[in-house]
Each structure stands twice: as C-alpha cells, then as structure tokens.
Length: 267
Image: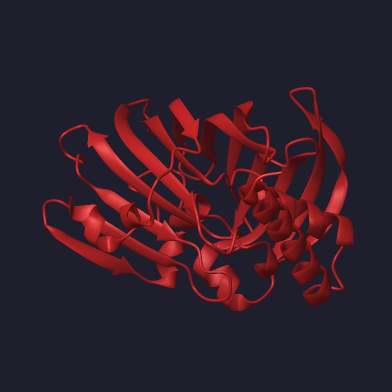
C-alpha cells in the first residue's frame, strides 16, 4: 500500500474515533457514515474543468466556466480548494480559495479582478451564495461532521443505489448561524459514501433547497475515492436552479502547496 493510501486510512480512522468519542449520544452508525462521506472525495490532489449553469425563476440562463484544483493537507483530513472562473468576461479572473481547518474556523478568500485585491472572508460568509449559485461557500468547502448531531432515519435507494438516510442537526447556535441551516437530510450511498441527495432547511425551519449528485465515478482505486460528475441544486424558495457539470476530472496530478495560497490567487 502507498503512503497516501495509509494516510487516507489513518485519517478515516481518526475521524471516526474522534467523532465516536465526542458524540457518544449520537447514532454511531450515522456518525460513522457522515465521517465516511466527509472523506469520500478527498484524493491526494485533483484538477477539474467545470461548467456552471444558473437558471432563474423566469427560465433565463447564465453559463460560467471554471477550473477547480484541490489538494489534501498533510494531516490527511483537510482539503484545500481553489476555484478560478475563466468565462464569461464579467466573472473571468474571479478566484476563491477555501482551506479546511479541523479544529478552528475554515480559511476563505476571494479575489475580485475589478478590485485587484484578495479579500479574506469570515465564518459567517459560509452561508453566502457562492458567486450567485444555489450553493453556499459552506456547501463548497464542506460541513464538518463533528459540528452536527447525526441520526439514521432509514434505508432507501437513489437511482438504484442503496443509501442510508441521515438527519443532521447543528450542534449549537454558532453552527446554525454560520451555515444558515437548521437541518440537513442526506441520502448517503453505502458503497461510495457520496451524498446522492441532500435536503436543506433554513434557520426558520422551512424547506429551502435540494442538491442532487449523479454520474458517480471511482477516481482513485488505491485510495477508494469517488467523485460525482454532475450536481443539480434547486432552491424551492426562489425557484432558482444551479447545474454543475464536471467536463474533465483528473486525480493525483502532483499539485504543489504553493498553488493554494492567497498570493497565487492574483496570478
């Protein structure tokens, strides 16, 4: 087994152990499933080209192109994610950098070419829309399993795949406020641990949106890592919709840490 594979296994064991200890009152099976979900797509590194289609309530559409790069940090748990928009002209050059921090607030930056300045975002920005889409910054960077209390609701199927349905509630008011969600229900694929469907409720307890993921691929056989190639988010409150297609995806590309710094965002 490779060093990366060993780190991946040790990281997964660390997450499950930490969660099981800290969240003894939670459903152990649900806690373990959501820890697996958190790690499911975290390859050593990856580069992808994506197309984002935004559809408003009147049917009007905007199409955006972007490049995403990710890299697993040395602890084998946290991910660095850089997203750079390449088209159209009004958003070209916009860059976001999202860095997970296991035991503290995640780091987030955005570079707006019109201002020619990198701006650091705060924890409350995680609930904000990611560049006008139906995904928030928090959805993109990921929701820490330890911040939520998890209970298994039932077993089900999605597109013929066996899933566990997990209800997740924010562990405290800080998590509720920073995420903007009072509840999430996730349909987790039992083979890949990917979230095939997630429903979100706003802070007032009203159903807010659904995110569906499909076209699942095994992208790292040694590390047993998976990736969905199509995402569709629908906001029931605004009738707005976002589709995200992975036009190209390649794992384990040898990306360097220097790519994931605020200084690199302006290049």
